Structure formats: C-alpha cells, structure tokens
Image 1: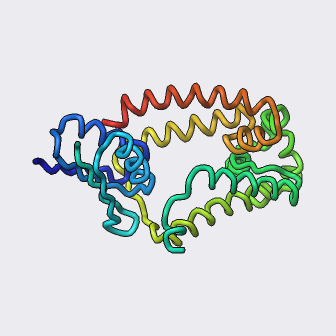
Image 2 (image 1 turned 180 degrees about the horizontal axis):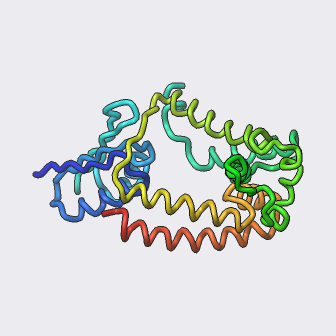
Image 3 (image 1 turned 180 degrees about the vertical axis):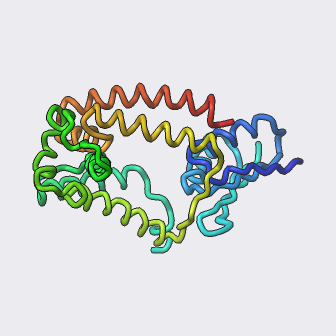
Length: 74
Length: 173
C-alpha cells in the first residue's frame, strides 16, 4: 500500500480534482492519495466524485482555510 | 448553527437567495444587479485621471448609454455600482471570516499568473462587447425574460467548452 501526497495549494477549482483523478489513475487498489488544498470547493467536489466512483474519502481541515483530503482507491 | 455557517451551501440555496435579493434590489432601487459596469467606470475614470480621455470615447455613446448620467455627474468612482461591488467583496469577506477560512493566497507560479491575467482580460473585454457580464448580462437578463440573456448563455457555454479544453491541456499539468 502506497501513500502519495499531492500538493494543490493555491490551485483554483477544478484543478485539484482533475489532478487528483490523474494521479489516482497511476495508483494501485488500496493506495491512499493525500490532496493538500486551500479551496473549500475542492473538498466538496472530491466528496461528490468519491461517492460516485466508490472511493473512500476523509476530509480534515488541517489549518485555517487549508484541507487535507484522503482518497483511497477501491 | 456552526455547521450551517461553516459548510458550503448547496447551489439551489445560493440560487434562491441571489434571485430573491435581486428582486428586492430591483424593487427598492429600480435597477437589477450589475457588476462589471462598475469596474468599467472605474477603469475609464482611472485612465481619465492619467490623461487619457476614456470617458469621451465612442464606446459610451454607442454602448451603455445608461452610464451617461453617472459620467455627467462626475461620479464614476462613487455610484450605485461601486456600492454593489463593495457589497460583494464585503459579503464574501464576512462569509470567509464567519467560517474561519480566511487566508491570504499565494501565487502558484508564472503560468498561473499568465493565465489569470489572460482570462481576466478576455472576460473583461468580452463583457464590454456583450454589454454586461454574467450578472448584468445573464443573471439579471434571464430573470427579466430578455432574449439577450439566452444568446449570452449560448456563447458562454461555447466559451466554457473551449476554456475547459484549454484548462485540461495547459493548467492541469
């Protein structure tokens, strides 16, 4: 199981989601991607996308206006 | 209560609120919501101060004759549009502060700056040719059953399609 970080700080929506999908494509089942973003909409979009695609997701607000989004590939 | 302030509202809630507030604004001030016209007047006013006679350009004769009174009153910096635009910024600031998500954003890189500038210039120029932005030209136009808003929507959809292609090609790595 691999854990990968994806730095999407200061990137506007929908770039964090697009980059997350692109990165997840290269990963294996069970791997975890940690997306760092400072856009609240990134977490909202990824939650919707994860639900539609069967990914487990956890979102934490790691700092004021900064989020860590954990996505596990099914 | 906390959750209600903190979480992003669904689109339908925002849509209903914006629609309701626009009706209220029209009823109270006699004018539907417009955004970019205010910045047009600021821009032209700044050019005027720098010695470029922007306020006498043909544009203000051909397009946007509704700004004539504001220009005649010499109030390009202080008018109803300025108040509305300051309201937008203040409201957004209050909302971020209330959800404790206020943050100074850094610039990601030169590419981001270039695209942001290019996009801003294209949007600004387009809104001037269309005689309004997505608020005055589309949102308020649609609500008043004006045909121009539907034409605006068609071309915005086409622009968004091209924009998405460009974004995928150049910005998302």
